[in-house]
Image (tube, rainbow, N blue to C red):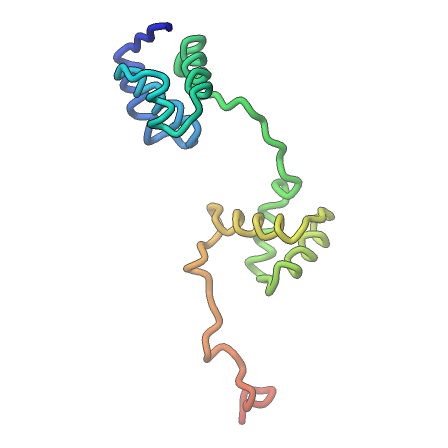
Length: 160
């Protein structure tokens, strides 16, 4: 079994990145490195973190081969969404014309971008769009109130 030695600078960076790195996978790797720096064995690290022992070994191998920079790298490359390029346009459109249903949003997205997506994908896109920097969280979106809905006894012009 290899011995790992951590410099003071690396330990300070590991301690910081355990909680403050923006990606949770990197935080997980830093937790493994922190436990290893405390002399915890691989099997015990796997038990404490809920990871497989092979994953712990892979994280430690990455540190041994390339240091903290290797541990901060994410190995997979995702496929970008076809709607990503249209996000600003769609956000402006949906703020001006809020859809009443996912099907209505699906039709608008297809009409505006030419990209057809399923209802689940449209829901996820709208949820991500509303959580973006320009979007508004669900609690601050305007909701219909009893005074904003036309009553059934009122006429077309709101008069009884």
